[in-house]
Length: 107
Image (cartoon, rainbow, N blue to C red):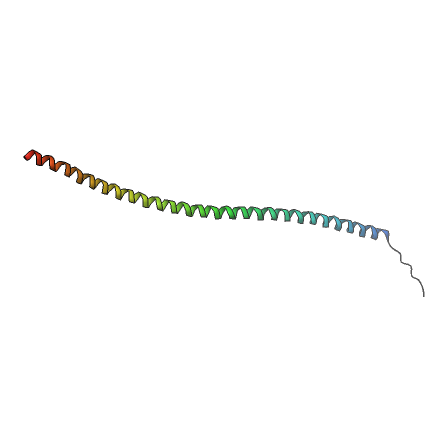
């Protein structure tokens, strides 16, 4: 068997080394960018969760406010009805007070 000698061109090895270095740097950069993107995603997810909770709380509070407003309207209507009845009773009582005075004047 005959041994073959391989002649390697050093410039090709240098080019290969440069490509490996460039690929390694690119991988490092991509990993940093990936980690930064994951961190931003985590922040965005947390922010979205907070906003979703705030929206739900706002909706719940809006529902409570609507309920309180309708109760207030009912109470105001009831108050008006009570005022009307009290006024009628006062008018009746004033009529009662006037009637005996007129009767006494006739005697």
